[in-house]
Image (cartoon, rainbow, N blue to C red; front, side):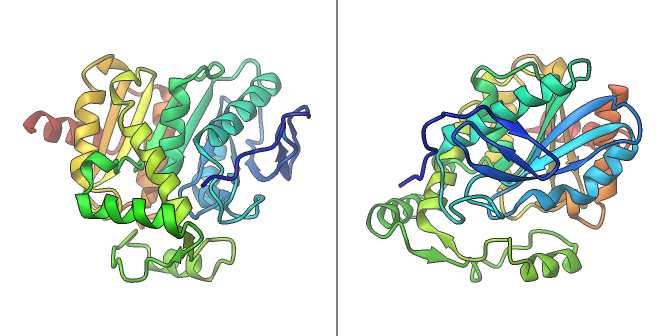
Length: 308
């Protein structure tokens, strides 16, 4: 079950506090602007059950280096409408496309980049398959790529049964026992944050899985300028589906694609204890168009992927 947008009867616009979509939805917006004319513009999409605040520290760093950063709460998350509900893949793509179009009008001379963390990364991947405004490149931080074909049969069967019988059922995930980051203080703060969803509707999990399927199956069609970041200690998105995606992803236009593996990294790479390393790499990739990342994580990834 999805809760799609209504009719598009409005002109989209944004101000300092929110992004108003064509169907009239008000999506809370955060922005971090450089003190001078920006060198580039970046739109960041948060992960599942998270919201725009996820980008606060990375954006503060990037804005000091001349990159204007924007992040909004996606439908059903944070303080956006229909909290806890799944809006549908196309809704998330259309919202992103609309916001990028608005930014292209405001910043006609700056390159625009997209960054997606986890679920946000899957949204960016699927959006790039469709007609998007001129985008200079995309950054995928631990993208959600755990597609059904890489899950055990009993997991997909249970998910299907729940989604088609009790889509309103909520799950907490407390028994999963995975470590999302080594930044324990940050994780505790998320636990206290009322805008971070703690109980997830089955219909939203089902929708996320559909999104991960679409992203995973887009590997060979993603030929834009891309930087992918992945942590060796990621316990949320398993290594096998990620590696399977990367092998197909790198078969074409490999010169435009950079993959970085972080030995100390977890799923929440941008907020880990070593997060500043990823911020520096992203900045260098955007501003300097660096052939090699400062951390060397790209060279490490190249060695590992060649051994597969």
